[in-house]
Length: 85
Image (cartoon, rainbow, N blue to C red; front, side, top):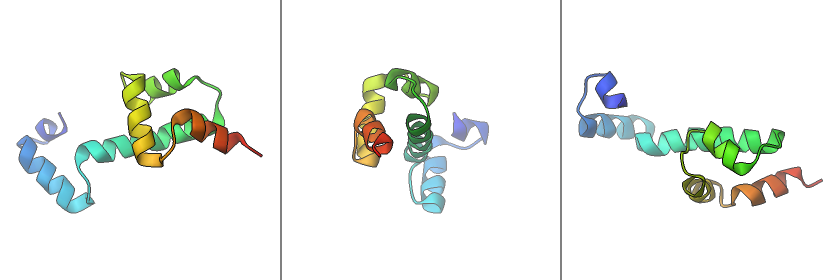
């Protein structure tokens, strides 16, 4: 969708993006979503399922998988660690 919005072929856009930002567009978007999720998990009491939805993930299990790949912790463990004194 992003490539189409700037009138570029998907592969060409992906190559340009990766060359300039050092990561793929999908990975960059996931990093931004997980950063937002981390802030929500630190500061709020919303359930993980709601946080995943707010951050643009349609599947809580995929959200948890991506979250753990990026942070090294599950969303629940991250929240526990951040709320510990």
